[in-house]
Length: 373
Image (cartoon, rainbow, N blue to C red; front, top):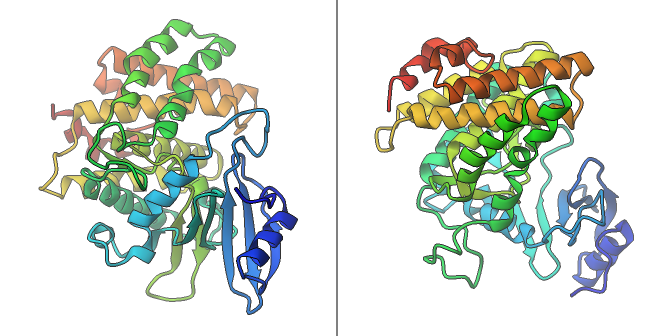
């Protein structure tokens, strides 16, 4: 392993010098990351790139052990889907729109140091209320892109270099599979704190959280939310905005319903607290249309929608109790909303689901999905 301390700016500078990149003149540790050490590197001619280092612990909490192999999986995903791999038959199946995965430049596997293109400073969560940004168009473009990702990756293995890609125990990312159940296993704490019966949380975790360990429909981004969409406004009439999908270390094989449910939950929160610009309905309608129009894949149905609703509700009930969106009363309302949807799903009450904050704004277009098995 490298003797350079890649958790510091000086260590990154020493590493760059050692590998012959002495023209990199500026190194800045970026704020905001919780798991990794992320740096912006500026070269002598102004060229920018991002270096991302995974230590065997969380950046914000060194006492919390976190397997650095997670970076191997991000590099693996980008080697498949990155625009740098433009000749790949998989990459060619992704739409040529404003949306694209971050471009992979290089990966030092031994040092768990990923080099990627610089997608900019603003993510969609921060840019949501920018009046120059067409939020509905952004939602539609993201939906069409992630639907294509799900449809083109049904047979893709995430096996790492040196692993047998045909072996079932190699084709998934075990780190992501384990982490992704976090909100399900801890939902009981949010419900207990806000006056709800924790037996509901236990049942949801047992019936639905357990499925996350065996889901195997397609490749999922794994952390698909507005915070992982970098936004650049352009003056070009052909492409008014550039949307870069970053943070692929939680990539995994799973059900497409979780990517949809997670993004829909965060879109709902943005619409509810940041001005109601319509990100949620734009995303949901465009996703359903993209999946339903592709006749080569199984259409969406009630079982899939049940998973979307559960994941959405778990997210809405749990994460706002950990990441502040509103005041105490507002947070209570969010937990109540999540609980109502979860109870409706368990009661098979599809009429109430169509009137829920998840689907009320799109119920005309999504009602036919419920009619399917």
